[in-house]
Image 1: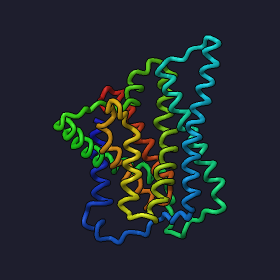
Image 2: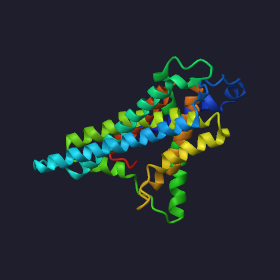
Image 3: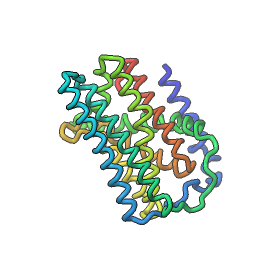
Image 4: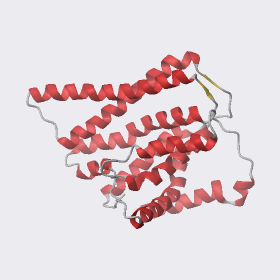
Length: 274
């Protein structure tokens, strides 16, 4: 019932903000996102730093796990997978912050329109308005995969949540999904890759490339688990890029992303397939 109300509210917002004739006739405000002036070699160095920091954090966790096993302290397999995800995400966050800190003196941002003054409200509105679109894309994509005889298994991360059998596991996977992943992924894919490409490539490339990479990283390509999420996640990524460009605040998409993941968790807790 609540999900139906959410979809109805999303349809109303989508109509008022995007689809109604008055909204389409009204001149759009200038994008609030300026150009990111950073030389290509330094951008590639930042990207390498982000990935290396993520891998390094996982390596450090592995050493810690080995030390614990020597003391005969064992961590459940699913919990260990979750902790590896947390370590990788936090490592990438530290790498992104380090890259930003060291390139900031040589990185300039062109003047743009005024950024959103209400990022929380904008994040909530974005989440609600995008739900009908993502639902429609999800239904169409699932039917297409099923018709083609391709697997429609859910993402491995969702399996970890549904299989969690301890409060600690639930806390870890919820923290990862609702807080850590939205912050890290929005910094990397929207504030990083999209923002860098949008003034250096045709706009459609800047929108599509980060979206495809973002969606592809959520699939286990050995088993094709999570293939069903590719189109919805790609659509979500494009929406987030457009919203980030319009509002100039990465906090807006972080909040919308976190709410989207929280909604998925609540559906799982309610026994609804997500």
